[in-house]
Length: 545
Image 1 (cartoon, rainbow, N blue to C red):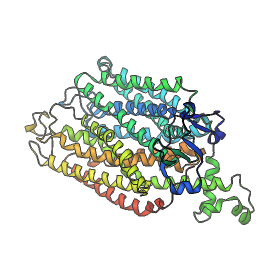
Image 2 (cartoon, rainbow, N blue to C red):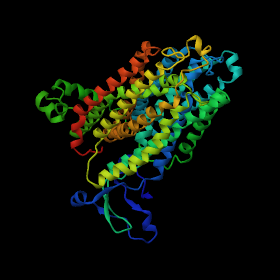
Image 3 (cartoon, rainbow, N blue to C red):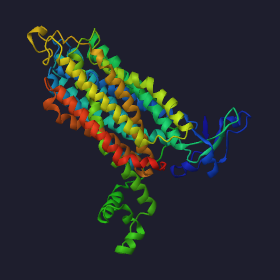
Image 4 (cartoon, helix red, strand yellow):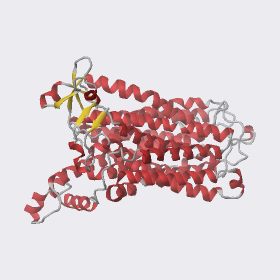
């Protein structure tokens, strides 16, 4: 465990002295002096020790995901079906309306990260933003739970309660997500590589980039454990009732606030730095006027060409360029999220058209986090170290391309599976909507578990894309804009949810094969474009800001 001497102000965090627990045991020190350039070239890079505060905040982030997935997973059935349907629901608004409402909630939750990030960077700071947002989400969870009681449903409180809960949960979730990822990484304060002596006497060198990558991979693994809440709430929804299902995320949301309050003095808390957005916007305008060259906004250029004094320095422009590069990389991610969001609505409806063998149709999506929990250690502790030992650089752009490829395969398989559903009786391309279905009680005779490859392929795609995107957003963002850049990354999921709404006209039988085939084609084109446009950025080692 790394111990930090003399917790200082935010500006001095990076200069803190680092010792290890070995110093207290009389063992030889693990770390020697700061690594030399020769050490960096010759020694094997390894992951550094990770402070306890990293895992505390990772727990908060994973708990928030537990609440999000636990609350949203039953929503499609809750809104789409009526209490008398084969699949029990509450509102009975049919598939298209339910899909739009769920997509709107997804969009709001992810787009809310942008204003929340501005608040975090300029006013509240990341810690307070996470705390306030968690309390807002707690209120939303309480309203969702209270209005799902049978008496509340009979009293007509469900629609108003659901609308209020969706708004509060989306705002709270966006606030937590905007700051939790950069706040996690900020807890690891070591910036200089150190020579470390292993127990076998081998000298290695700690690597900040590898450590941040490791932290985010473990965080993603914890998030997927949180994602198993969907398994719990969907089973409770079917066999007990929606109110019990929504009690689970409410309790977890209350629990997530505890470490924020109890260990509040443990965290590295950088105060809000004031708004740099006006300066960043002004600098971008000057760069655009110089032919989209941000170097043209540097003080010397502005002084020589326009006799103008600007309030920033060269470092500010260089960091802004890095942040803008990250935002450019994220431009194609809405297509990724458009495809991933199918697991929250249309794939649940597809499962409802198939033989489920007594398993709720919205439970099978839990195969995604289960696959992620199994495969994340294989990739982060197996594949990545294997490549590192052989000095094979598997950069962030390459990882994203691989993730996009797996997601393309998932969409191809989904289109094929939907064709099989339409090729099977009794209702063929109008599942649950023909006289032979006995008023929607008999599905097409094909097993729901044939969806398994979709969720496994999607899990692999997420491991390569989600963790890499989060890591890249943190590494490339200027210190004063980390929450903002992180929120731009998260907001791409919101844009993806908005795009999903555009597919609503064909989100109905018998057009679903066309829809899934279109998604597969668009994802394939996106994969190729991403590799062409951004693959070259892997040639340079990431500069950590």
